Image 1 (cartoon, rainbow, N blue to C red):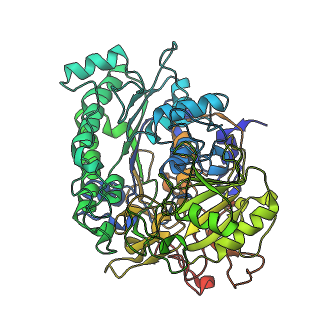
Image 2 (image 1 turned 30 degrees about the vertical axis):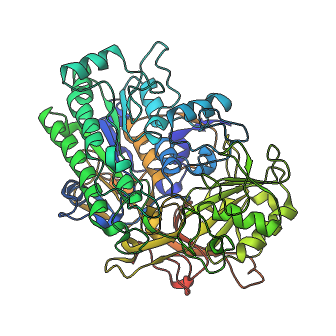
Amino acid sequence: MRRSLVLLSAGLTVLSTGLSAGLASAQNNTPRNLILFIPDGLRALKVTPETAPAMAEVRDKGVNFKNPHSLFPTFTMANGSAMSTGHYLGDTGVFSNTIWTNYTSVPAGDTVVPFIENDAVLGDIDEHFKGDYLNEETILKMARDKGLSTAAIGKVGPTYQFDHTDKPEKPGLHSVVFDDSTGGKNSVALSDEVKAALTKAGLPLATPPRGDNSKAGDAKTPGTVVANVAQQAYFADVATKVVLPMFKARNKPFVLVFWSRDPDGSQHNTGDSLNQIKPGINGPTSMAGIKNADDNLAQLRKALDELGLAANTNIMVQADHGFSTISKESKTSPSAKVSYDDTPKDFLPMGFLALDLAKALDLPLFDPNDKNAKVEGNKHPKAGNGVLGKDPEKPDLVVATNGGSDLIYLPNKDKKLAAKTIKALLEQDYVSGLFVEDSLGRFPGTLPLSSINLRGKSATPTPSIVVNFRSYASDCGEAPTNCSVQVADTVLRQGQGMHGSFSRGDTMNFMAAIGPDFKAGYVSEIPVSNADVGMTAAQLLGLRGSQNGGLVGRVMSEALPNGIVPKAFKSVERSKKKSENGLETVLNVQRVGSQRYFDAAGFPGRTLGLEPDAGKQKTAGK
């Protein structure tokens, strides 16, 4: 049954009344403008007036969300899907940045496990899943359908996802889309109006490359030491010199999404800490990435002032996830004991999960990113992904490699294989928490996918097992969430950056808001999440869309003038039974009405924010 997006969010009893006073403009069908600014991978506690003055000003003069939450798995496309729809991942089906689609995606390189931060790949997946792989309407689509001006600018993948079903070749209103691929053969087409405005502003029609910021290095060569300045300067110029003036001239409300690749890109590829845990993602390159994103926000706010738009524009700033320094260490992994040409001795290779499971389950391993070539000897899968079984075209098990967590799919829903896989995973020291598809049954030491809102109405296949990797805090001299370290299944090196885990370092993203529809100088301790961002944006804009699933966020009423300030409660959920070796998956939860927020999860003592005495867990990285 398809229900109203706004009506369903209002179904939370704690929010069913009291919003009208704070949202009069939206209810009069004259919504104010909205800018969603996403500083990818920004950790909440790294923002100070010195490190990021523009973001600190939004936080300190507007609303400071002190209890923020990225959705697990804490990846970009996953959380972008939540922001753009207001739905949890069980509904959007964007379970990570790399997923199993159960068909071969040609634009992704002829693989069944595409990396989806790519416009052509998203278009291909859309086509395969009835024209809308998200299976839910996005706020840009709803705003465009209502006649608002809409634009999405920034990092390739999540930017396009905000209005991925828009077809520029068809008549009607269209979103303005700029990302890394703009000007290339697989880019979203620019209108003649936009091209003319670019030329008038002296800006090129194609996005410049990332340059040295894209250099990740290798086991012997450090990665980048510069932020993504030139590319993001172009995006900021496009927003401030082309899009905002164009929208002002149209004299109607607008929605602008600006997705800053930094600090994420600089933290991933940092060359400050090759094969060393410290400084990790707290070195000068990461800090330059934070400043770069902050400079972009400052430029946007300055343009709003100069164009006379500031007083009528709400700004919501929210990172998609936090971040952690990568560890490649394990004492139990068989793959870490093998010598690889591109991996330091005793370190985990890329694809260690697929390699270790192939050995434990005694199943042949094939590489879905190398024409299903068999992986043998001292080789590892090229992209870490693996298909296991006698026939790679009909695998028994698929591993989609992502970083701080991986996805496992069992195409045949084999419960015996699920039990063997779980047993093998429980023996590895790099594992910290397992979540299993509900229909496979309950297994000692695990929790069901439904417990973390990963089971819903998704169009794409639901993972059978989600594997969270171990995390801890280094002695970096800052708050534990700023010192987060995690084992990561990635081509990146120890000392570089990753996310995706259930560490509080990864779930604690930066969130703040400012504008005429938000309180001023308000500090909120109430938990909020990226799903709430989508629901609140829809409410501010007076948008009502249809939907398929019911896993939705809530309107952040506590941040709105005269809005209800709900009460929050803490609880701890855990496996019904411990595993044979005494492990149990524990989940720290906060509740607002029927809404659940996930702080951290895993095996106590192996997840940052989930200490051995899990029953007394504090939140917000304290």
